[in-house]
Length: 133
Image 1 (cartoon, helix red, strand yellow):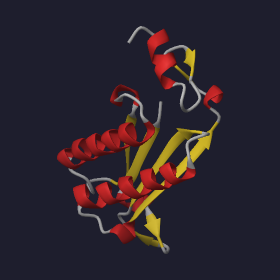
Image 2 (cartoon, one colour; image 1 turned 30 degrees about the horizontal axis):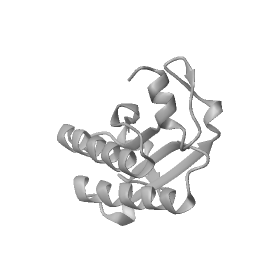
Image 3 (tube, one colour; image 1 turned 135 degrees about the vertical axis):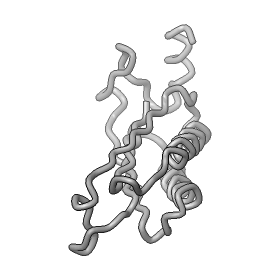
């Protein structure tokens, strides 16, 4: 269901960093939003070193954008952002000042996964059961 895109300059993250960060993002999202880990997608987008700038200078921040369904409690979404940001710093060693986590959201019915319209938050169990998982 959720999609996380981690963007940074090429060669900023090792393969182990990516695997560990993907695992942490998946664990955190699954625990907070009560969905199976199999629904969490994490993508790494590495750009050329001359394509990432902060303050008009080449830089190596870690920018994490996520899509979540509308309707989750605000406090849980804030906790999600906070925990993902902390995990990013812990796993990669990139200072917290260089990590940005931003969520975008839309109604669940604006998305389709596995050929089915996504359920609203709180309706996941019935949706999963209907799929036979």
